[in-house]
Length: 146
Ligand code: RB5
Image (cartoon, rainbow, N blue to C red; front, side, top):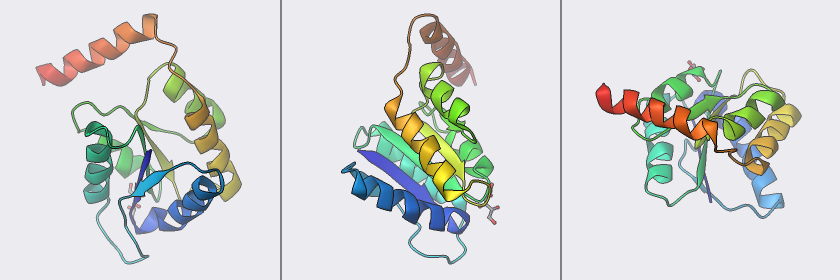
């Protein structure tokens, strides 16, 4: 199950991504927003992160205009590793090395087809573990120290 959410800047891409998920029988929970009306992206970052942390969803996808605000907000949530992905390579490495449980995309930055390729790459990639586990543990230690 994928948790998906956006602000108005990411709304159109969210709808395109939902169509892709529907066509590929990938289940998702849409945490909003549900229109192009202006909203505050941190509210949606929080909802999607809660969906992932509660284990209702396995991974999260957040979309705003650039993906920047969503990634900053999501990374404030304890236990969330959110990667701003703007290429196939960053999407692959966000999972292989960082075990990102959420990715952020820029609805005003990415072409539709490329955004789908990025998503597809992220969803089809697995964490490599090994030495990358230790690095994630070190990130967790920063989280608990601050
Ligand atoms: C909203 O206008 C825009 O600031 C937002 O979608 C996002 O790009 C923030 O990082």
